[in-house]
Each structure stands twice: as C-alpha cells, then as structure tokens.
Length: 312
Ligand code: GUN
Image (cartoon, rainbow, N blue to C red; front, top):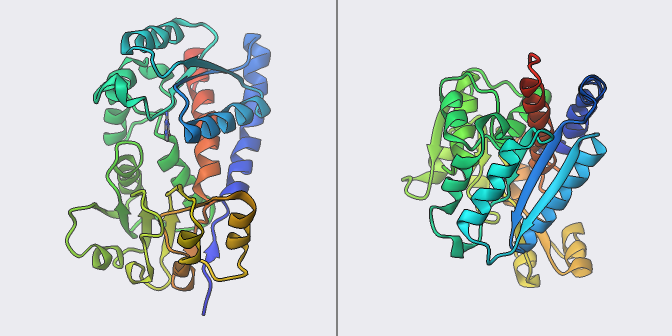
C-alpha cells in the first residue's frame, strides 16, 4: 500500500513565523511598542481554553503583545459588546479576537452581533461582513486564519491550485465558505459539499484537492478520495472512549498508545486509511492547526502595519 506524502503544517508554520520576525522587530523599533492582540474569552469551554493558551503563547514568542480579557459565562451580551468597544478604541491593540463558541445563554445571534461589533481594521479573524465582502471581491486584507493557513500549506508544499478540481466539504462561515473563495481566487474549479449533498462520496472523489471541514471524526473514508489526490484535514475532534479509538487504529499503534497515556486523542475528519489512497495528506495533529495560529500572528502584523499607515 502506498502512503501519502504528509503535508507538514508545523514546518510551514515555523517558516511563516520566521518570516514575521523582522517585521515585528521593525514595527516595535519604529513605533516604540509591539503589535498588540486582544483576545476575549467568555466562560470556561475546555477546548477554547486550550486554543487561547496556544494563541497567547505563540504571540508572546513572536514578540507580540497579547492580552486575554475574560468574562464569566454569566456575562451579558451588552457587557461583551462593551469590552469589544473598549478594545476597538485601545491604542495598543491592533487585533481583536473573540473566541467562539460563545455561551449558549447569550442567545443564538450573539456570535454574529459580536463579530459585527469588532472594528474591521482590527478583525484578525476576518469574520466581519466588511472583510468577508472584500474576500468575495478578491481584495481582502484580513482573511479567516484557518482557510488562509490551508492555502499557505498547499502553496508552500508545491501543490498546484490553478486548474485543479477542488472540493470543500463543509459550508461554515469560519472555514468552508472562505476556503472555497480562496481556492476560487487561485483559479481552482470549486465545489462546496454539505449535509444535503447527493452522492457526497462520488462528488468528493472528483477532487484533485479535497478539503474536509465538516467536524465529524474520520468521516472521509477512502471511497471519497481519488487516488493521488491532495487531502487537507481541517477537523479537530476529540475521541475519549477506547472503543472509538480501536475502531480506527490497530492494536500496538502509536495513537492507541497515546490514548492509553492521556485518556483521549485528537483526530481529524479524515479516516486514517485515506493515507493509502491520497497522494498528499495533512495530518491531525500537526497539519492545519499550527497554521491557524501562524496566520493569526500574520493578520495581527498586517492590521498593525495598516493602522500605523504602512503598506502591507
Ligand atoms: N473557534 C474555533 N475556531 C475559531 C477561530 O478561528 N476564531 C475564533 N475567534 N474562534 C474560533
């Protein structure tokens, strides 16, 4: 059985971070302050705690100022909007990120109301409708971090996008839709698939580049994959029962050992056996995840330079 080439997200993320360093240093020297990122975390969602910790650590290592503003799960939407407003007006914060998901008690439209309230110039998540509209028109400055990280991973791994048939599974505002637009702007022929797609596996198997961003563990099996295709796994799913891990990984495998040591493992939306069919595959962990953070740092730098009146 052939095994797909692994697309090394950690290496590409390190490369992007190294490229950022001189820009961060120049900005700090010229303005007398580092580029600043304000992260808002509401409540105590365990996954969000881990993501935010990673973002703070990476920002610090890159020489950025990074502050976390916490609100309790019981906070009201107006309180959260006040905090966003304070960061919008802050001189030292160039980027603002409100970690999703927000507590359900804030109401169904809380996320869109909060993302709409972030100043588009500081919107390092690229979620504001102004930034989404700019992306649609292919004149974006701040683009959602995960899909722009996927593009960096593909391009820097030598995968040709122009002319390729690309299939994106998932149509979220955070990943699927911006992903499809970024691929389109690089001249791929793009199909977006979702839960109502008829003959999903067949459509996916037409792809030269398949992006799985639907949030279901090991959903994409080898019958979804054209032999030799590039498969990008955006999923981050936690498996916390041994039976669920045993269904996917053989006895004695490293992932089963990982489970026995930690009590859970993280897997993507792509089944491990896809490695026998795909030409190239991004692993989970170590694929798209590190790039999401690298692109957040890059967006913060872009926002800081634009605010300082420098060309991006
Ligand atoms: N929650 C999961 N992914 C993201 C992201 O990219 N940005 C924010 N703000 N929250 C998230």
